Length: 589
Image 1: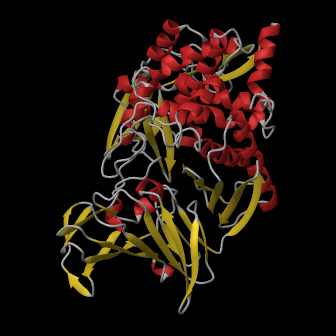
Image 2 (image 1 turned 45 degrees about the vertical axis):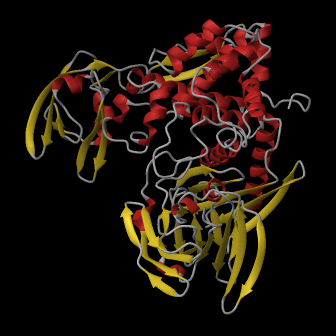
Image 3 (image 1 turned 60 degrees about the vertical axis):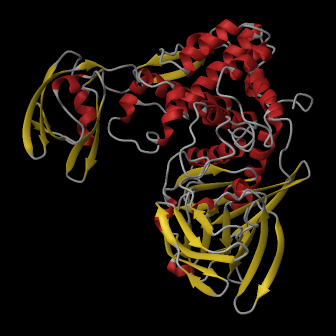
């Protein structure tokens, strides 16, 4: 077994967008093997981080030795037992996402899984040093061991990770970021922000603290001793990635003034913070310890991401950040999206989870027809499950109680949730029986593609799902269009639609409707002129070949939905509604 590798990460010339890395290890064999991860936990796609590695070299003591690349992510260097082997390389870092690395003259952000090679077969603790310009600070969830001023223009920050999982889970934000802190339950929380826009910095920190308190009130323990929120502000950006004791959120720099945009930012922060419990501790068994060279398959992202997506807005409501009315609007949006999504009848939630590696992060023009989002449909499934748990338990239990049991049983140092019927058994334990009904729910909603009926679930809290047409046309051919400069392109064709039956395909250029020129801005208005059953003539180009197609218009599905209170809610419905949307009391939390 090799001794503990020491990794040194240097930000020398940030304007080159390069990260310099050296890994030194005392070898116990005649060969040292290093492997670059291909993905980052929490983002389920192989990203091939080795493609950004360059200038790989190796030294034994002071002598250069050959180093050979043996596959897409692995290198080997010859040595003798007891030799000190140092492998050095550089990583190109100019991709501003929460999953990758970004270095310029204003900061350096990196995910260690996208920077640090893994010494083969090593499983112990890992000392890590970060050398940066002297005026730059470092923010990370790892605890600082020592800070040293270097000769010249630099500072070294020393850390130790308990293992590769801990290292790869700890993003670094380095630069002249702004920093604020607050305490909740005597635990330090820090907020660091890179970039600027129209944010009100003090108000943003206060609202992050409100979100923090609300999530903590939902659970029963605080599983960390310090927490770091890292925020990146950039034009039109959006995304987040969870970690054990930190999160990284990339948001639109101009998204802080308009209320709907700001609530989306706070919802993202709440979502990622909720993952501190659900995913990083409460996790499916395949999600830790991780294999970094291949896909890590799970069928339970409906729990990891879907349940989290259900609770993010619900917790904002319970905390008073958004109103009950607004929360019901957001929930109705999800319910409507799932009901109208053709892929819901094709792919189950468990299959969507398993296929995340090849589908969710690689959508194409046919994705809506064959796949579902484990975020949105998972949130809808969680809402339905919450309502049915309330019904099965005669109003004494909810999905909150299931999460509390999961929190107690599946800690970070414990094995994850088995991918069998453990969840069904646990829910039956919480509600006191009803196993056949629970098994049926899982067969239909989690593992099946059955039509999801909302009315019974909504009735538990005195609501009804009211569907109507709104201002949209009464008829459709089942396509989505987009204006691309002077071209009106058909981007999607719905399965089973009139357009599909008539042979219209994605990427056809839409030219005319009944011999009159058409573009994306007029398409909806023109459709409103017709009645279902009308036959129309559509001119398109496909690969610059003119096509004339006759299409009989379908009746448009009801496209609007509101969650409305029933006319005369019972006392039990009113009590469940209040319990559902309120913060737990101190005795309950």
